[in-house]
Image (cartoon, rainbow, N blue to C red; front, side):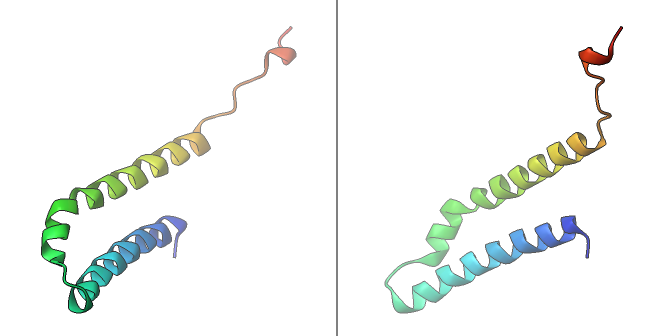
Length: 74
């Protein structure tokens, strides 16, 4: 499995664990998990977007050619 797929799997796994924990808490504590999920669903988009942004910046940094240092210029 590539590092990218592992990271995607980790993020989605984390999201599913948080959602599952919210529903489990609803069973034991007097909360309305649907209400909280309805209010917090944009967090999923923020986390996903941040992950893609960081991934893109890392890829760009790895593919950029090294700039020659000014010490080697004659």
